[in-house]
Every structure is written in structure tokens, then in C-alpha cells.
Image 1: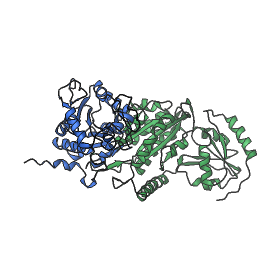
Image 2: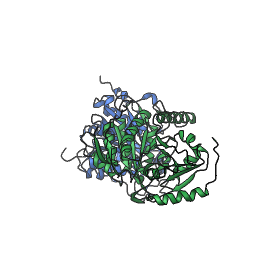
Image 3: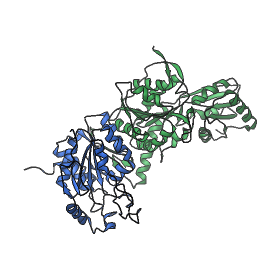
Length: 249
Length: 346
């Protein structure tokens, strides 16, 4: 029988528990990453995980391999430096939407332009969770947050369009659809150029409860009911998750 | 021995190449761009032209962790953008060389004019406490020589070392003997060999510790000790004694070349390692009644000298990119009439 716990070799169990709140989805993404590494039969010394700042920024420290926890927003250029220095390494950026799309947004634009062969996993919880619940680049229109008491007036970042503008790999999943999430990460890691996995994850404490969700389970049920899997789209609709087609690859 | 006529910025590249530079990441800026231009011609060095200076220094940090010797080069505005990540590099103990070719600031200032306005930025520009090693040569030959020192000190201290230049000496052409100096090797294994966690958070044994003042103090003390001990092996300065003189002039970089003109009337001291400040200056200063710092800013190093020797120090402040011998002479004369006689307290 297949040993389903082998992925744990990629995690520093001694460093647990994580600093994340009860109900947070980040742990599921951490696990999915480790499972994807295991499925691809990676050597621990073949992978480097790089993160930025914020809740998801703490993810790098839980991998049992060389990892780097950078300044806010700088995971991508640092990862590009690693990859350029040693092309044999699998370099994975594991960070949040505020870090990657807000303060680090310009680096993302240029990394896709360069098509640097790194995999970026974005923990997209639509909020700045660690600092208490301010609007983030992915906060939806009209959502109330600490900094948008009248509702968010700015449209969320269209990250799919940004990634696909330079024909990079884009996949989207959620922390409810765990087998699908793992598949997205595996395919992203197999992609020869830049790959981006947009993971919709629940922050119950600093977002969900303020917008009407009772608990994390309700948020997960929302993901279950709202998102349909479509793994063969050119471009995903707002209520779809999936792996989009990448021309010429 | 091979001699070549080189521009200051070219000399930096010649030395960096011989010191084992593996990757350069940078962003164009006057008066540092020639370093990038020269490096893209080198087939054995990886060069990344990034989207800004923040990306540049972070790409360098990543490549350094991955095992290469790295360098970036910029001027004041770009150096300001790098400051946050310089603190990160100290916390993660990243060997790297940062070249700052100073131009007139603040802000965009006068891009093509030399200045010495980044002295305090180089020492204290990032938040929190750190103890950088900073060199500031004053000729093309010295830019060549001290680029080796910067690379070696970076490896020895596992920290980012800053090599200051200015728009004058970086654009000067002089003959340089292309000597090979000893080269330090990396003491730490590259990424992909272990399970270390490099973080800008306060940490102990590769693990974040964010609520222990004691851990933070231990970490700071260890980082300080490492940089101070390394700096002792790079104690560079130039002292031109003058037993007839009652006044010691202190200058560095481009301006110090003009100050050589006054060696008959004054004693001269030129720190080459600006920080950590050289202790010898205390002893040298004690032999003169007056101490005057000349610098192309509003007194950034002067205050540091006062703090080191616990005496009032005269200042000839020359911002704006102009170096004029007659002006310097007039200012020195004017200052001498005002300076009180001082007794050394050391």
C-alpha cells in the first residue's frame, strides 16, 4: 500500500505548530506543496523555497530544506537570483497576495516578462491578515475591511491576465479542492518557464467573520459551491478554478 | 606586469572579475552605469539588468546564497532603494559587494556631479543596528585594489561590504597595474545542500525567535563582533605627517586629491576604511592643535570624527560637486582664524 505520509519528509515537523490562526487555510497549501514535491519524487536538496512577509511569508520556515524568508515583496527577485546562479535548483516562491501582488507587484510583472523558470504559489486570502485585516490587492469590490469601512472601491488585481499576458503558466485552485490544488502545483512545477498557482484560501479571523461567514467551514463550503473545475480553459471565469492552457508549451 | 589606462568604473570591473565575481545584478544610473556596460561583455559572469535597485540587490542576495560571489552598483537614489535589503543582507549574513558611485543629492540632485553625500546613508541607511565595513578609495588604482578588499572582507565577515566611489574618481582615467591580489573563498555551503532557514526575523539556529530581547541582543552582538573583527584586517588609511603643522586635515575620496595640495602647510589624514572608523585617528589627532574635516556634504563625517576623538572639529563643507583649490584655501584660512586652541583630552 502506498505510504501517504511520505510528503512529511519535506516538512520540519519539529517547528510546528505554525503561527497561523485556527481555521486558516495556509497549512493546507503548505501540505499540498509538500505532497507535490513528493509526487514528483524530488530530492530535498533539489528544492529551495522562498517567501516574503506576512502570514504566508512564514511558510518557508516549515520546509525541511534550504529556505529563504525575504523582505516584504522581494521573494521573486531573490528567487530569480537563486535560479540564475544555479539552474539545477527548483525554486519555489511561497507567499501571499499582498506580498506578491501589492508591494512586490512590479517584480511579478518583470519576472513574467523574463519568464524566469520559477514556480510561484500565491496564498490569496483577499486580505492583509497578519496586520489585522486591511484591504489587499485581491480584496473584492464593495468588501468591508479595516481600511475600506464603506466597502472596497478598487477592483481586485487581475492576476490571471497579468500572468497570461506573457504566456506564463497560470492555475487557480482553492483550499477546499485539495486534490486539484496538488495537481495544479505538480503541473506548475513541471512547467519549463514561469508558473503561477493562485490559491484561494480562507482567512476567517481577519476577513471571513467580518463579511458574514460564521467559521472557516462555511468559507470552505462557499468555495465548494461557488467554484467549478475547468482544466481546459484559455482563460478562467471568476467562478472557475483550473489549469489554463499555455500557448506553445 | 600588465598596465592599462582605465576609467574608475572599469577598474572596479577588472578587479571584480579577478576576485571571482559570478553574478552582477543592477539597474542603470549615472554615474555608475559603465560598470553594467562593462560587465555585459564578460561571458563568464552572469548579468541581470533588473527592473529597479530593489530587485537588483535581492537578486544578488539570492545568487550569493546559491554560492556565487555577487556585486551590484548604483548611485545615491538607487542606494536609497536598496537600504531595506541591506539590513536583510546583514541579518541573513550575505557576502556581497555594493558599489555606490556618489552624485549630488538629495533626490535627483545633480546626476553628473560628484558628491560625498552618502556617508551616513552607507553607515546607517537601513533600519535597526548593523555594522557595515565601508571603503572609499581616491584613485583608479585604488578602486581596483580595494574592490579586491571589498570582496574579501565580504567573504570573511559574511556581510554586505560597501565600496564608495564618486562621480569624479569613477569617471577618471588613470593607469592601473592589473595585479592579482589574494582572494578569499566562500566559507558557507550554497543553497540546496542542507535544511537551513535564512530569515530577516530575529533568529537563533536557523529558527525565528521574535519575542526574546535576549536572543536579539545576542544576535546583534555576534553580528557586530564579526564585522569589527574582520575590519581589523582591512585597516586602511593614509597619514601624511607634518611636524611643522598645527592642524590636521581629514579628507577622503575625490576631495582628498585636491587636499594633497596643502601638504606643506598641514598634516593630512585620509581614511580609506570609513567605517568602522580607524582607531589610529585618535592617536594621530592628539598630535595636532586643530582638526579640520573637508567633505563634499554638510558635515556627515565631521560629526563622526568629533564623536570618535571627543573634540570640536572644524568643517569645510563643499557640497554641489565643485572642487576648487582657491576656494578650499580661502575656507581653510577663514576657519583657522575662528578655531580655538584645543588641548587634547585623550
